Length: 145
Image (cartoon, rainbow, N blue to C red; front, side, top):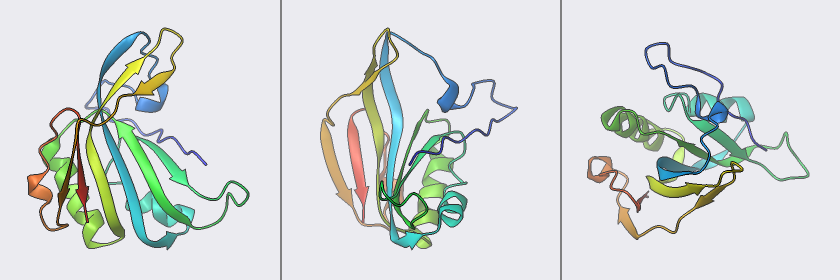
């Protein structure tokens, strides 16, 4: 089940990621996968992710049970402020998250708007208390557990 974040930041003229229509481009976007310590009700899962505003949010629930508790979520979008992102990750790991995978993921968006994600160049595993070690290098995924 997908629930795009429709919030926008008036200080930043960039539209929310869910409304972007870039076609025929390639680049890197922040890609986060959050696995919650325990499945959360939909509203609680969205509230836990509020610190990561301006991102497209996909909540994962069983296909045949859209109102079931949410075990994990994926967020994608531009990296606006690395320090604010690290602060949000620290908060999630201190509260609701069991594991977070985060990095700048390479993509290729076709002229029809279909996005193809490139393979990660490198995976790095860090203890959950080492969020400061996340460097946001292009193509590097950090796993905080």
